[in-house]
Amino acid sequence: MNKIPNRQAICEVLMEKAKEDKDIVVLCSDSRGSASLTPFANEYPKQFVEVGIAEQNLVSIAAGLAKCKKKPFAASPACFLSTRSYEQAKVDCAYSNTNVTLIGISGGISYGALGMSHHSAQDIAAMSAIPNMRVYLPSDRFQTAKLIEALLKDEKPAYIRVGRNPVEDVYTEENCPFEMDKATVITEGTDVAIIACGEMVGPAVQAAELLKAEGISASVVDMYCVKPLDKEAIVKAAGNAKLVVTVEEHAPFGGLGSMVSQVVAGECPKKVVNLALPDAPVITGTSKEVFDYYGLNGEGIVKTVKENL
Amino acid sequence: MQNLKALSYDLRKNVIDMIVEGKGGHIGGDMSVMDILVELYFEQMNISPENMDDPDRDRFVMSKGHSVEALYAVLAAKGFFPIEQVIKEFSKFGSKFIGHPNNKLPGIEMNSGSLGHGLPVCVGMALAGKMDERDYRVYTVMGDGELAEGSVWEGAMAAHQYKLDNLCAIVDRNRLQISGCTEDVMAHDSQEERWSSFGWHVISINGNDYKELKAAFDEAKTVKGAPTVIIANTVKGCGSPVMENKAGWHHKVPNAEEYAQIMKDLEAGKEAALHE
Image (cartoon, rainbow over all chains, first blue to last red):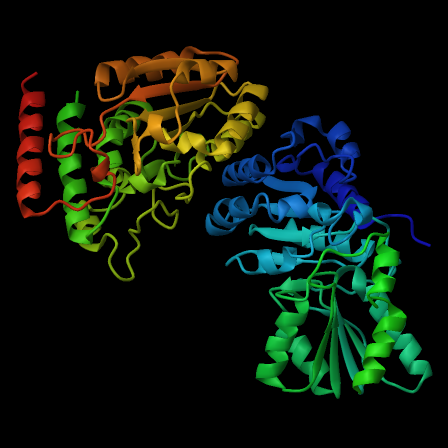
């Protein structure tokens, strides 16, 4: 059982890179603990900016730093970062084209019992609708680390969402294939294409194993790059299958499911079923309890596949 | 030394032509802010087409982005692009010269338009200057109506927290916004107390007077350990009685008769400035 959450993987990469790169700046909005960035703040106080509980300020200050050649990473709970400071993300990061990486922590329904104010089930839709904003939901700690390394190499704005809790490893340290803005095909199959992002990739892999035991061949695509969406990978996986199932920790509108459906409808029409959270405040519980309740787990995906094949 | 006051009347004329040709623009605020911009670009800041990539250049963000016509006139006068092109293309189909600042144009650092963004962005720029131990200064101009945006005060808090004495904000205090008098819409009186309670050094001046503008910016440079705000009390529509202190001229295109009178008044203002 992995005990390292993706947010901690982000901190580890940034601390390693900051040894050499004095332009890396981390910003938090009273969120350094939640973001696992306290070690960075302690080790590199001159490269750390605390803005207090002020998410709009967090994003605008990051943009100003980026305009002066800094490489800011602004970390705040995804629920606030993707809505309270939405306009700052739109105008100061995307429109002004500043090299800001927004890190939405405790994303999706990670905050469980804290309620809808603390859930970010709309962030994919909101951020993806902004021109020049990229959206990434890495699946595990190894992929998260590779993504941060890749983002350090370019100078464009991006939004990343990671969850609060440790997630089961999808990859291993030695075997984590990663190409920037290209989905990772984990398994290939001919009956169903399961396309997932973020924390839902683990359950998708589990579903493929369960389906295999029942003689159903599934491909699993880790679409960590929700925007720019890897259309080629979708068309390839969907083209080989009879059914497409998308799985995401997001509202049913405007997320991965909507985007995949758009591509499949236009390029290789066939049935697409979207598994997502409901269009309602979610039931109270831990992430696992909530996912189980809505069928966002291995068994739930298997059930959906069998009902629709 | 250049007669900045006389120059400002010529640039106001450019703005009027832009707005008439483009059939729209925030004319009143352009007129009130013009002297602030002219003083900044021609006397205070080291910004020119030649040094746009110099890490030591001063930084400017037009937070009240709707007064972009005034900024275009000033940037054209600094040689960033020809004024004839701006007047011909402003707001037209496919134009680069849109109704709010856009950093695809030379001389513009940040896009704005939505209010309450400039100050927090400048906090970031000023912080970068401190981190890199560079001497550049960071300036932003806000409108007084803009001060109702909560994000302004988030930026004000952070600038004080980080002792950003390389940051200078200017409030174009023309006392009018689109719906009428600022004090009726959302009161902003006691500006000095508001800003000083946030830990800022405050200087109040007549923002259409070059002697006072120069003295204020010079004073700001001497302040250590705190950001400075200049409350520039200005006249909305400054330059012609046709527009002055009239809320209706926040966004209005002069008709032929008004155009003739405004241009006459601006020319008279320039003549008077040349003989002061």
